[in-house]
Image 1 (cartoon, helix red, strand yellow):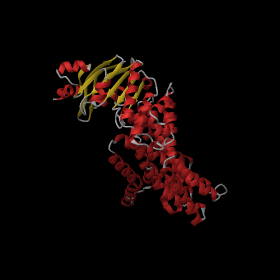
Image 2 (cartoon, chains in turn blue, cyan):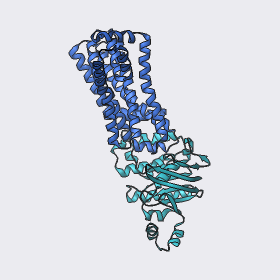
Image 3 (spheres, helix red, strand yellow):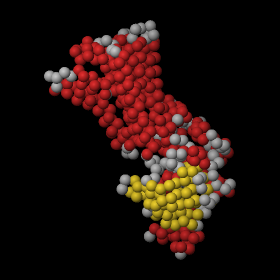
Image 4 (cartoon, helix red, strand yellow):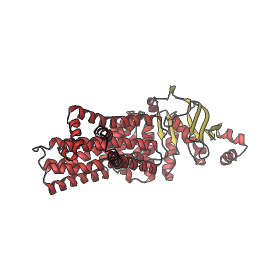
Length: 260
Length: 231
């Protein structure tokens, strides 16, 4: 697996798109800091961008990489290698190179603006950690979609649909249900609803860390009470971890039964 | 060397292979022929473990191939379409495959043979189709495996490279290897192969030498013999 990972990673680190992605975050980071000159505010704005953009790029990149390297994968399949090591290697190659673009692209401007001397360093690290988690989650979901769909157009369609579902529709349905059932106690429900969706979970984790939970009202207080504890933090990371591990196991299972 | 028992494969509603029994033990060049969709590539890919059979057993070099990638150390495979990671250089790709197999290799002779030196530092994405196919052939022939599988090896090659490819195939045969080839180009098949396997509707319709085929179909020429099977 290591070798495949190494070469996929090399291949991607040299691709134009990795640089575009990296430069985009670099520019975004510098622009925000230039306009705000306040690390803490920049973190919030960045969060709003990252929470939506990272999953989108992860899904699109994952699907694209899989389809583009299909013939090459066939060449690898004819070598004395395990299927799981081929696909896990490719998946990790994509996820790692995307994460690296993200971490470096955002990290460099913040370091320049004195991140290490500021108090937001932990909030900022949490932003990067959740961004990395989201990259791994959505890349592995994308690999699953691509493995189950021979048709590229269908694969891309499902990938976009998945992103829309988790990034946009989920929130809408969630909000509607809160409005419809507003007569009932909803704190538990909204807590569970937040934990189940990795995008919402990352957003909530960062918001609470930035201590603007007062904005969230009563539910915010409940959230604060839950996520503020070690137990809550553990559950959150467990949920994010499961979102990575379960699709990754599915990659292994699916690829072992697939015909090429 | 290769032993296939009662191999079945269905894709959706399409029965591609229905009960193939095949034993290949002889050395030399064996061509797998058949009309489009007769299951040639599926058969080859089953031997390579890329297609997973619905039922049946395949063993290669006396090893059952199920969940066992090591037997592929003894097979060199040339896929039909050559497409490589576009950001890798030719040199790096060759290095990578060598790195994956860790076997004795003679890439230098082949680079010279196909005159690929000027392309070594070019990215694979910038190469023409024919040059990619040469790289593809180089990757296949640079190891010394006893079984070589070539899927449509002539695609996209210019006449000189085609002559060189035939030389390679002949020298592989001389050194006592078994070479499985699929091709639609009958001239090529007639010129190089010692034996043919004709697939029709997922079954082996004929297995034997070209001479036997001509006798069986009572035709003088190979193309007509093949055509008479199909009509």
